[in-house]
Image 1 (cartoon, helix red, strand yellow):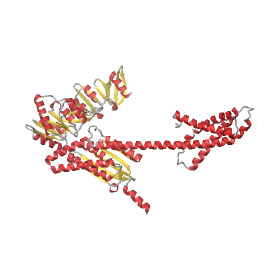
Image 2 (tube, chains in turn blue, orange):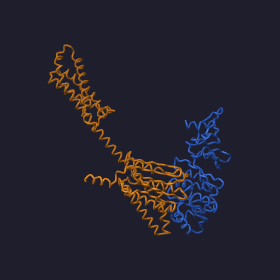
Image 3 (tube, one colour):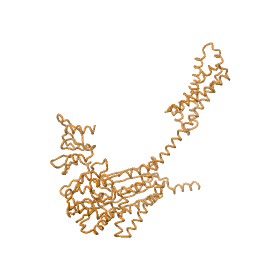
Image 4 (cartoon, one colour):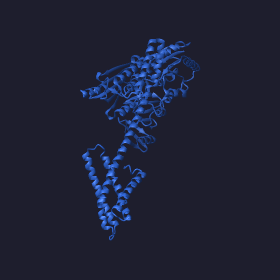
Length: 246
Length: 362
């Protein structure tokens, strides 16, 4: 088994690799100190198993997993204490370790991971995990987009609007557009419903960007954004927006 | 609202007292003025109750002139108010007497003779009413003060509990233990050092939390211990700078106001930066106030941190409870930079109060 260790604390990485070194058939092939490095190393080294810390600079453990998508190896999460994450792991039956990790517990987790790798059991989707680990009442705050090999982190309050294009979503922010493979209904449920409204089958609007609403025809309206962009609005979309902004 | 009018039982008791006063006047009229019993009762009791109702208005005058109002102003106001009340009442008494005594009543001539007695009774009644109102006012004020003191105490306890809970941040505790576990295998001396630091930190925060106020230097030392522990975890990524003016080191501050801010700076600021950053603590005297500033860089793309602001809100509520509006907490959150500044009254220095005393003796 080839193993990648991801943790932003040097000592946490070193104790894990020390314990792993004592187990048979385990080879630590790499260590990453932050989320970006983790994504890069996971793709370059193609490990069988990844120990993944949750709270890290730049990208959280969940976000690393989301970016890796189907290329993600088997994962064992490590955390010192995170009540919501622990609940998410239990719900989705993902293996996790609490730091400081006791060697017998580590051995058992590695054993289970090996079985899973052999059985090729799929990981639960990172989105679902992250959703479950979010404290109650907290909605998606940033969007991760991979574009030409680079990772873009887009805080949701910078989004002007989101447009559906075939299998992709196009995020408009300050005149720039970023594309990501995701469905409209998926993103709609993750965003804060008091800030983002689906005004049309193909458009989600950041309410703060709305300048005015123009009547366009019978049962159709145009949302005019503060930068002058015009977006079509359906009857239900108009009703939703009206309900929100009164 | 007038306290006597807020409850039925109070109003009834109040009227009862005035009825008794009326009976007293009636007795004097009957035995001293040879008035017919029935007339005296009909005349005096309603008038006494009327005086009582009139006196209710004194409450507002009591409210506008609490104890401590300059004596001449108070005396003049009460003299004026008392005279007006008395004259009004006497006019009512005259009207009432004329109404009750039909022409030809044998007592009609004698009734005029009761005037001096009525003036006397009215004056006594008004005087008693004013004194009573002042007593009631004082009672109410002391009750309110008691309640406020109790509220303050509860708030302070709550803040203490919250700060203790914040001290025992589970992330901090378990991550530090993890560092110790890792160090034991690599560098036993460093592991031992880390245990000492943690013991120091927990002992200090436990003792400090019990104090009302501590010299700033002690809080700084707690923060230094905290940063030393975090530096074992974060390594080179965590840097710190202290700019503490010598003259403010002995200024007294509420305990655990600086530490939560530095903890925020580390966990929500520097910890999210790949290259790390510098936490800067500044303390100085400005216009007779103590200013404490904590600055740190932060990641513009950082996820909204869980519980940021909790620490700050806690510090703010504590400082406001303890120092009232003489203190303030300002937060400046920019894209890549975070700063909290606290202004506290700097007068509570143990040293300066002693020097004042010495100066006074000299």
